[in-house]
Length: 289
Length: 289
DNA sequence: GCCCGGCGATACCGTGCGGGTATCGCCGTA
DNA sequence: TACGGCGATACCCGCACGGTATCGCCGGGC
Image 1 (cartoon, protein in one colour):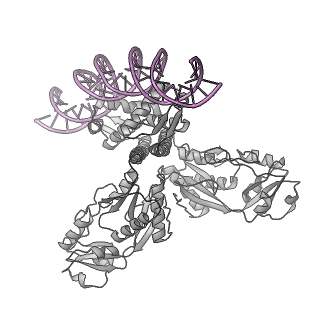
Image 2: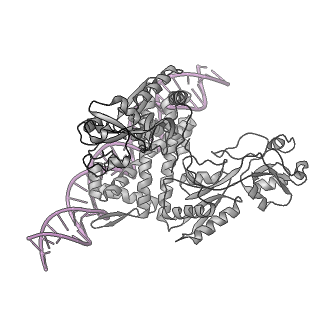
Image 3: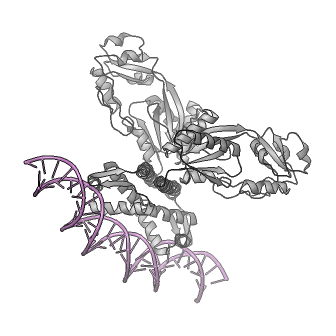
């Protein structure tokens, strides 16, 4: 099975329409039909049920769609990692823009002070983007925040766990409180919750605004368009007009340094060592399920 | 990057010789040289350092070798799983031949008694083979034994933990004891330890015989050619001439039902449910590191 | 010192396959 | 009944992949 064939199949399986898939792939429809037919012949399995008004997946087709996506992701990651391994040495670290700034600074300082450090390139991301970059092999490591990000299939080192605070516009009645419960926030009729991107980048439905990054988030809170619940450490960068109120019953947030278990390298090992030195050895080999 | 190119590169990187790699791939050397050169051009990275008497890997080459192997394994698994998904439904379960027989029977009975069971094909394996079959996608699930097998990158459900016994030929001086320490066994001058296959199928060096399966193992013990340390449950199938003596300080062995986290299917979910019902919910999402 | 053998690279050639266009057969619908 | 959209088929072309022959380089043995 060639990756080209997998690309073709995934496109057709996602579009459920040969014509659209062919356009998306930048090719004509007939060779695509032939390629899929040949793939089915080689696998000895029908992948698609065709009828004159479209295509549906068979059981085997569902399996190959799922497996094929992971294979293509692995191929892309292999390419990216190889390409970067050929460049002058240097680590690329992904982090949410505007989050865990002190923690990041401490980590980078410790690494730079360690034995033979290499330059670290910081890649500041929109919400949820770091995890994708890490899985794609575009970065060597990422600063993730549990339980928002997932470390499934990654190795990770716990750095820090903290409670959460609610961010409210300064004038809001609840902004004067010394503590809040989550239920009080979700019950607010005037302030919706922000909508954070899902794993695939899409947004859930709902009344609140779609959030891409930290700057946009605090601006929307200041404008009275929503509330937000964020880790304690975000208090250090509150913009005027936004008040932080502790929310003791919100799930604590753990910052972890995550990396691909397959992608070991000497500089990466140094970064992990620095993380352990600074934040203590709370290694958290992440569950797969 | 096409899987064909990856196959080529892995072959060359493993052989460190274009001619041998070409022979292994069943092709001539010149097109192989060209294909690798083209791969390097496309990746924009030198993968191999050539000189007139062979080839060495660059840093990027090492990375691509590691990543490429995992990609090729994933591709092979995807093919196998898709092919099997196209066959009439049925689960394939891999288990060490002659190990955990009662446990296996209990699991299969419980599954067959559950809601809409499908036929279960039992694939009895040589030592260490189940894990490979599972990772290759040739089976849906496997009965593994920790700490001998590894569940890294797999999902697993703990079924049962037990101590170990030493198997000794009937006439041996230690066979009369009621318990043994590991050190007493390894110190034996007359009986070597068996050599079990490593993860890649090769065998470590040493004096003992190379072990492939359970039958061969107990025969060799009966013949006085070695001792062995096995889980308690192997006592139920002792052949005449073999005595089992508890070894309290041997690491306990845990039998787990393992499956690929990516390969979810309804029948597999049923099997896992049956395992949880029979053996209690000791789910052990396995560490990745 | 020379020659030989083994290495990877290069030159050149044929062909099979991947991709193109044109068209068909089928079906739902206006 | 005619049309439009679907996937399949027919046919053609070009190129990239694989083959053979050969080169340039180097190290070792006689």
